[in-house]
Structures are given as structure tokens and as C-alpha cells.
Image (cartoon, rainbow, N blue to C red):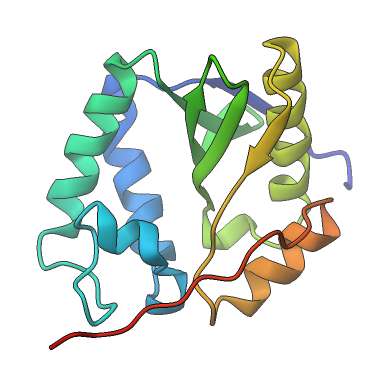
Length: 163
């Protein structure tokens, strides 16, 4: 990892603008999956909602105050370079990685892989048994990244536009 130190810490309200900046720079339509449509981030035709940044700001605020979510900052040398949103199904010991984004200027340096390793350790320390995620079908780089980091495909989802 070229002596890069990556750490995780709980998200903070005062850093929401930084998370929004990273989200805005990294979002692309290949990222959209059915989860983005379900929560209103994306339209039925798999395009980002017009108010996506306002939605994300509200989501970050909600995540910070919820026991059912972990909003984690990904830091390199004490600078926020990414974030992860993890939904926690505590009774079932199931976690869902709703989002993980790393700033473009530091992608490809092992930060995402190290962040995933730290997320695994974080969840294991809380006795979670599985980490799930979903990804847009065209998001091939992400699929390769997740598979390289121990994820395996467990389902295939379909959509049919009704109008």
C-alpha cells in the first residue's frame, strides 16, 4: 500500500459538505442500482434525481442519528478521502454496504481495499456475520474491485420499466 495509512472514524455533521463533494465527484450513472431507485436517489429510468445532493445531505444527517446505520469517514493521513454508509440489521447480524466512495484523486492507491478491510474488522467486532452490497449492472470496475476484495455474487436482479 505504499506506506499509506488508512483509518476509519465515525462520521460527523460538520464534515457533511466533504462527503457531498466526494459523492458528487464520484457519482456516475453506472453506479445506479435498484437501491437508488427504491430510495428516490434515482428515477425509474435509472438517472440521478434532480435533487440528489439535497437527498444525500438529508441521508447523511439521518444516518448520523440512527442506530441502524454507520456513517464512517475514510481517512488518509488524517484527511477525509472517502466515506462508507453501512446499514445494520442488528438482530440478524447482517450489514449492507449501501455506499463506499473514495475521492478520485486517491483512487487506485489501495485506500478502498484497506477501508474494506477496516470495515470488515469493525463489523466483526460487533459480531456481524455477513456484509452484503449491490451494484449497478454496468459498474464493472466496482464489481472487479469488490471481487478482488473477497465479495462473491449471490444474486441477480432484474427490472422492467412499466412506463
